[in-house]
Amino acid sequence: MRSILCYGDSNTWGAMPVVRLGQVDRYPPDERWPGVLREQLGAGYRVIEEGLNARTTVFDDPFEGAHKNGMPYLLPCLESHHPLDLVIVMLGTNDLKHRFGLSAHDIAAGAGTLLDIVLSKPLGPDGGPPQTLLICPPPLARLDLLADSFLGATEKSRQLTKHYSAAAEQHGSHFLCAGDHIHSSDADGIHFASDQHARLGRAVATKVKDIFGGP
Image (cartoon, rainbow, N blue to C red; front, side):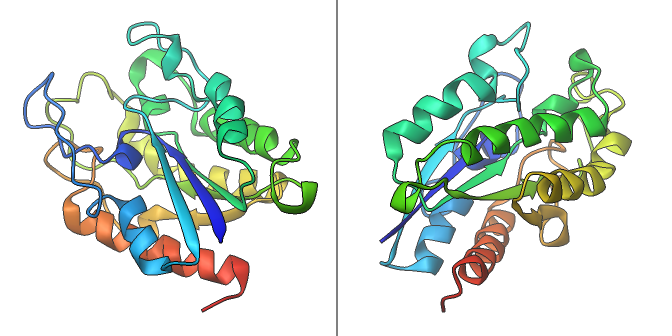
């Protein structure tokens, strides 16, 4: 059985688009994209969800806490679940928040740092590192309730693809552009509607099968 870790933020956790500030609702397991991935891959795969709301790539959040930084927890998480055949990283949306002041290049570099952590540890099969799949989040959609937090982020989100693609190549990772398959919801600009989770899960399943050369 192949083991896959999905390491991400609220869109991996399964947050529904925000309709009221302070309220976060969650899709059921089989509607979240890792759940769809699990169903599409079948019995030969174990899919582990590791999503955290507001998680960044490698940056402490001054308001929501240092635990939102995706870097310190990654290695303990890898060791908890090893051996792992594949680690999927989909982070970067929260790095677009105005308070971080990051460029698209910097955000992709943060994602690349996470790939390096995965690839530097013998936590895969046969004592080697797991393979990695870097997913570039889709561009932001219409911002309403979250507009102040993501001030100026819409255009920057459209620049992520080329930098993520370059980071994946640089760090020896497989790559998928989520924006080629799904779009963020106009309800809040950053989260996915249920049908988009389904489409992303299917797209990732196709990519995973391609990586492992199986049906």
